[in-house]
Amino acid sequence: MPSRTRHLTVLSQAASVFLLAAAGGAGLLVEGGKQDNNTEGPARDSHAITPIPARMPESIEAHKTSFPGRVSATAPYIDPVTPHRVYAYAGTTAFIPCVVNNLGQRSVSWVRHHDIHVLTVGRFTFTNDDRFEVHHDDGSNEWLLRLRSPSTNDTGIYECQINTKPTITQLIHLEVLEPRAVITAGQELYLDRGSTLRLTCQVLDAPSSSDFLLWYHEQKVANYEVDKVEVSVRVDNDTTVSSLTLRDAQVHNSGQYTCSPSNAKPASIRVHVLSGEHPAAMQTNAAPVLLSFSPSSYLSWKRMMPALLLPFFSLWLSLPHLPLSLHNTS
Image 1 (cartoon, one colour):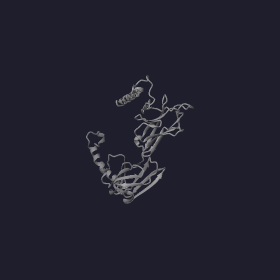
Image 2: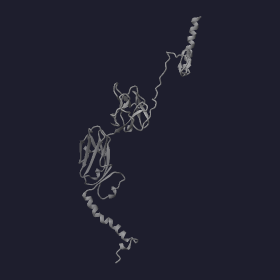
Image 3: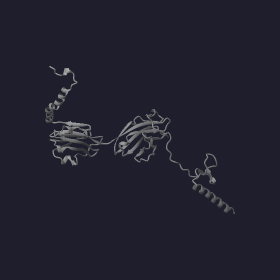
Image 4: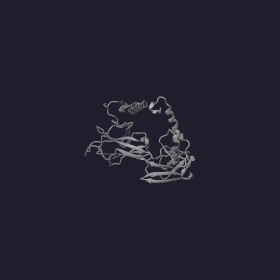
């Protein structure tokens, strides 16, 4: 029964293969269903499937200084046109370039420096943060690390590497700028009743001028809902600057004033309008503080000064331990 014997042999081999797979056997399968964990032995089955695991590249590390390599006609090096510092605006897309010449069969890697995190190797991404990816066109010598929607937390050093020995590397500092408003008077402002309140707001680190800018006094839009308020907006060297002016300020004009641009984080200041008879109210723990006095307030203080100093002068004369030369004994 030769035909029956051949069928039994085939079934036996298939069963062996099935049992090995079910048992989770490691290694490559060779003819006869045996497991081969050695580099030597029977010839391997040409139909066996060998998975190629994804491995992290070897010898990836963070370097303290750049070593771009020497300019060469044949050896790889990082072109001097590669910048050392790159700026980007929060919420946009950041591009960090690395220009590599004579790459040949080498590969370019990007490493985030502060945690030595490998971001990309060649065209492949090795991070779970899907905001990062590498962009490279065939025939180009530029390898761009692209970061979508960066924040200020992404500011830091990123390293471009070529896998040579020693490693050729370039450190590039990315600074993410977040548009913000700044009121030049600080965080608090004190002024006398009847004085003129003037506030200036600048929009810094913005990619373009503001489409609009609103001032708020507490919950009211000061541009339209507060009496006697004048607001002006101008653009100086792509920087939006706005001024708020309130003449004859009264106590009820005290409170929080907020500068709110369309394209930046707002800024606030607390304004205190004093009636003039409570100088102790001018003490504050907040800093910086700008004090503003009217001429009438200065004259009031000048008239009050002798009366305030007289008790201290009398006490000083009455002290017994002072030298006799300081007393009139005649």
